[in-house]
Amino acid sequence: MQCDLCGTEEENLVSAIVEGTELNVCRNCARYGKIVEKKIFSAEQNNNIRQITSKEPEKQTIEVIVPDFADKIKKKREQLGIKQKDFAKKLSLKESLVHNLETGSFEPSIDIARKLERFLKIKLVEEYEDKKTETMKLDSNEITIGDLIKIKS
Ligand SMILES: [Zn+2]
Image (cartoon, rainbow, N blue to C red; front, side, top):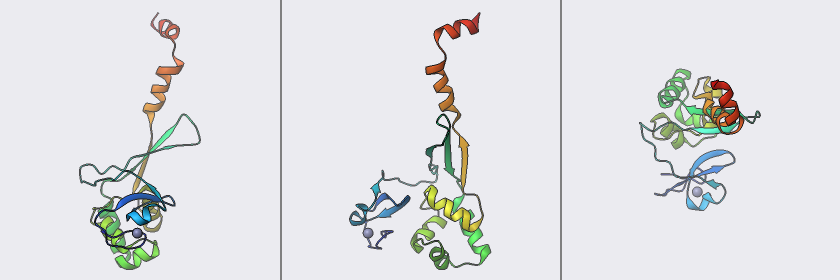
């Protein structure tokens, strides 16, 4: 595999957040970013779930990459008649990264997916509110034993 930053061929790349974008980088470049846990991609486990706390403190939004992102990207790029190489250039991504996205061997980070969404005008990220958080909050903090008795009687 190639380092997304310097292009060095290296067998063991690490995932690192560099300027808000998740990249696969060599050990040398990893010090420029924040190293994240190595993710192994598989067709069954391709939900890139990241929780984002929104401005309202009680609500959380979950952003999920759609499972058929590879097909969507490839089809739309081909529809637009842009070569993989030029497409990569326009989005300032590595050509190898675009290739990996289109074959489904690399799942985009939310940031990369947003970039692709804007350029291709397709939907790659699904958002929904995390309702569980609110319910749990109610259970633990706001309902006292007194309240429960009142509800039951
Ligand atoms: Zn590097």
